[in-house]
Length: 391
Ligand SMILES: [Zn+2]
Ligand SMILES: [Zn+2]
Image (tube, rainbow, N blue to C red):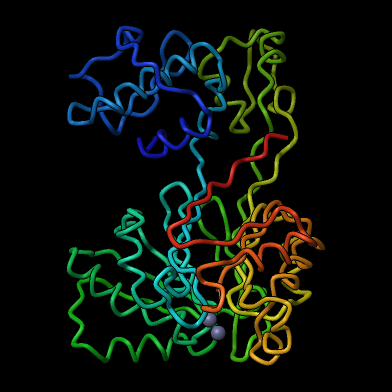
């Protein structure tokens, strides 16, 4: 099922300008088209149907154009379409160091993977930042805490209260290092909370893994002034690429048999057995995002970040404050960049920016880029999409 907002993001990502040719889709019917009905077989192809009567004309146009894209094989083949849905988005809700500034809220990062929303740290005002970024809140199921310093946790009571006001019923899980359970008990005992949903707390140690559907979150050892963890979000390996030509040459007609092979099932054509490996390429790695929270540069982060698509690293200070970074157990831009370089990550994002550089981060960026070019400095409400690699 494709969320229309993902569809829109996908559309932008593919760089296709919507051409509102409303007559192009003869398949469209306002009565039949249901939002929940994302894929339908049509003439041995798959046709996207995600519009319903109440959706805007814009999404109608996108629907038409995406169908055209698929039909014309401009950028997707139908059998790979489900993969294209798997968007992974990171929104930086708070990028300040310990002190909020007019430009920056303290730490909070939202990761949205196919609609599964997870917060990493939850500083004061995080729920308002979510409103400003228009991320939505009701699909938030996990809050991961890197450590229990105030600038990473004070947003939890307010966020829970807002969720309660919005009528939430489903449980929410707060994950963090040692003492997270005590913290949550404390939060529950203040403010006369009246919630209609459970708040569970889980404490992890470095190396612990939380399994989710299609991915996992691994706790990483970090080095800060209090017990702390980093997190690595790692997607499961993906199926290999489907070789349409090989399938056709084996006499397999396009349609449901393609899907069976893609999902690892053996099929039979005219008494001849065909196994998935005959038409599927080797498994492909999923995406990986590592978030350090507050930390000195350390080997454990470097190892965990090996080959990551995105490393989000503490970068409180510049080189001229290196001693202070050491004393307060933070990292300089250059130190973060060296970790990124050694781990050969796809992109480094610097965050937890000290108030000294809140307005002008050019010094941090310069120092980091001198070591690792693929670096950017996070800004509040900045959003990044992590793409699947198609090797
Ligand atoms: Zn902090
Ligand atoms: Zn801290």
